Amino acid sequence: MNQESRPTSATTWLNRRGFLAGSAVLLGANAMAQKTTPTPKPAEKIPPPADKAQTPGPSAPTGPFVLAPLPWAENALEPHISAKTIGFHYGKHHKGYVDKLNKSVEGKKFAEMKIEDVIVETGKDPAMASIFNSAAQAWNHAFYWKCMEPKGGDEPKGKLADMLKADFGGFDGFKKEFGDAANGQFGSGWAWLIVEGGKLKVVKTGNADTPIARGAKPLLTCDVWEHAYYLDYQNKRADYVTAFLDHLVNWEFAAENLG
Ligand code: FE2
Image 1 (spheres, helix red, strand yellow):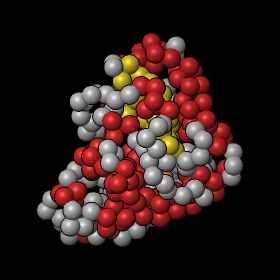
Image 2 (cartoon, rainbow, N blue to C red):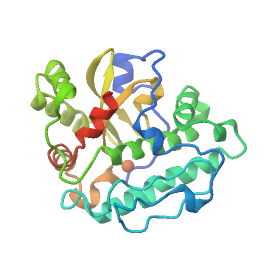
Image 3 (cartoon, helix red, strand yellow):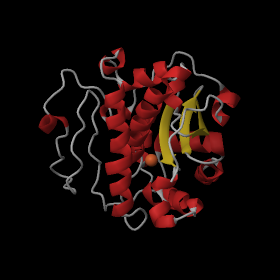
Image 4 (cartoon, protein in one colour):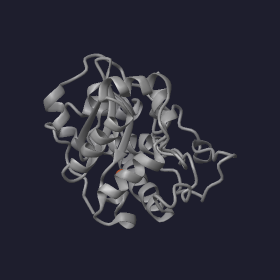
């Protein structure tokens, strides 16, 4: 499996498009991997959704940042993504990033900051790459879970559908570009649908890198680290990406992020 590494300051997107100055990004993921002040007891940190019974998750990490529960049961995305993949991905990889983040901010100012602010600040300093990687991966994964739902993948509606038509020529045009980005990302990383300058754009980032490090506004992401699909699809990333687009995308969540 791929290993985490320092963020690349030269992602394809960064080079091509630069920064979105001053646009604060506090999206739906705010509620997913955020600091809690004061720190509640572990039992209060992760209230299990009563209407979404799921396999008991891993224990809450100790620290200011929390591992939010999955929005659905671990087997809810089958047959497209197995419970085994979700169990490892969430319970080992995602939890590991949150745990590492909490450990790395002990006694530092970052322990008192919102995770989005930690990402922006540490993303500017290569010496902070370890904290950046953990924070960005904690945020990216929390966002990614919400980008999927059982029986998803239907066509978006309303304003988002109109923008997809204007900026990609339609839904099929978007899927082609997003699929190309997801499949074309060399090594580990993420494919994103973002808003930039009032237009929708598809970008890709390497390793832990995330558009919110530069103030961009993501609507949707697909994790293309091998740990996201290898147990189910082995090296056939394209099949996983197709399943994501055709059967899993939560377009209501993407529309909420558009605002
Ligand atoms: Fe992942």
